View 1 (cartoon, rainbow, N blue to C red):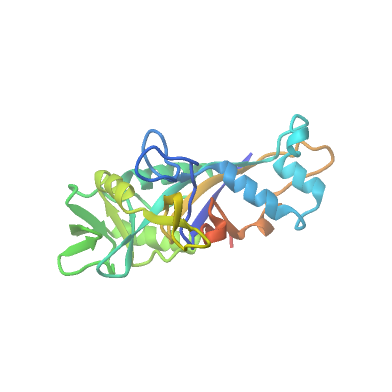
View 2 (cartoon, rainbow, N blue to C red):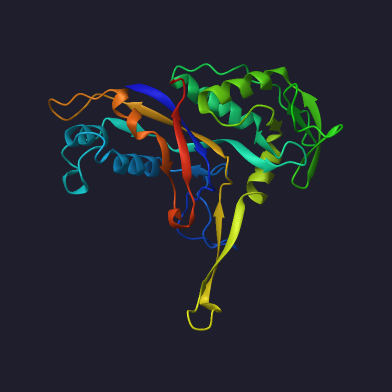
Length: 280
């Protein structure tokens, strides 16, 4: 089974919803149980690409890649396996440089470990910030404002890490996200704080047609990952289980590019650019 890294760059806010909430946010985003880090389920990626395949590839090839329709699911499994899309870079408003692409030692370590499964070799990992009041920047970063970096309500002292320049160049090449000059490595505890407090939360309402006032009970809050978020998934391709139908990675490439992921597509959520890491 061949494994590849699939980058998802959110061009619009992304709502990988859970369907319900128990706190002040009615429609929160999905988060990993153990870490609280947002993610996009692999089933969402598979479903979107399966829909995109209709009309682009022949039906037998589609069934070999994604499996039969639900009523015939017991016949065989699909050859393509989609992992959950995990967060790698989180965009945070910055007083300098417009926004920062924030990551943490844990996020980089996890990505490097999983990229190795796909035969990719990212740059060496930088040293972690010395404390939660510090961050690390690449040489020439646009985020510096004097001796501080200002992210939302946080003001952090900064240290230089030459390894981050390599990461910014590598990620810009493989994902095509606007990483250069914006990469910022923060303490894992600061990352957790930002993921809890700086996601996008908007109020939605439904108006009564006659009075143009809010309908009874029709006010709710939705959470999304901000535009420019960068996630990645592991895409594995095994042998076809459909007789006389072979599949290769090139069969999936026409399905990549731009795709609508997550919920709330009718109100402009979820347009992403999908790119295989290491591909031209």
